Image (cartoon, rainbow, N blue to C red; front, side, top):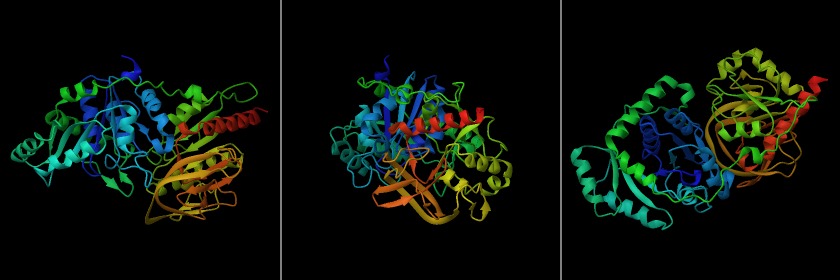
Length: 463
């Protein structure tokens, strides 16, 4: 089977809260337990759901975001992630037709399904309806003829009688029922201020939850019919995305060796796109993970640093207590080595979070608030820096309940151009720190530039 014809399904819903993540993760785990190699994907910028997908399948969870990466990259990125898989499952975002605010179908689950030529299975919360479910499904099936709504999974069904009424109603809809799942809170996943609690923070419990989801899906869904539907797809004409072609290698040091770039991980820094490490490696860097909660030193030979998103506000006491690593990060930044920090990384580089000392690289203080800052952004680099050349335009995403004061330094990281105009973030020496999450697959010049800076730092250290 060629990569372009990989079997695939999109798991969508009429709205958030219907149970997409429950059903998608359960299906991924059930098919994996049945011996299939399953490639997991998530529509939108979400970092947390892909962690559960990865746990269910043993493969990296990957995002498909047409706003961040552009519609033309969706199929290539999908094919890259799904290479070697027997089945690909794509969990949608929000409601099926909900996308970037004010921009039509852009970044919606429906758009991604059309770009992938994939059938859609709609997860419906049936808890407060019976016959009306057929009208709801009919509306979703007929709204956009370009979307193939090929099946329904009824979720939160109350009883055998309730299921019987729902199935009778659906008989007239022309859309087959491919599963019915009872209401069951035992396999739930805890949430907090930014959504589900990440896998890295509750791995043992998460493994148990995913196992329970797989059992529920096996009992309530027609896996054979779902797999047959997934195999009914046409071939995609696109070539898989190739990080080696996107990021030309950069040699580092006088000896031509590869510079080492350390990437923060662990429970406090769980937000990362899988393609970022692939692009760094393709650009010529060696990539080493470290955990700021536990590691007291950066990986030996570190010449560049990437600190992505996560929950430093939750782990502020432990991050603050690791004074040796905070000092090491500050020393690396002071040396001029390139440091890219997004959101949580921005806070970690500040003087403090809620009064607890952090790395002190940036002259700013961070604190938790009740206000959620959320949405897509367009931005431009105002001057040359370690991550972006002046004039580089990117699309990004903000998602946080913290405030940094001041929010922008004398040299801001970005000038935001849409949906509002303001400056944001801090640039100082080799440091680029911002709240903005950017997907590097859309702008591979960013990792290339970061690796080039690390190569220069390695050459300086070798003198």
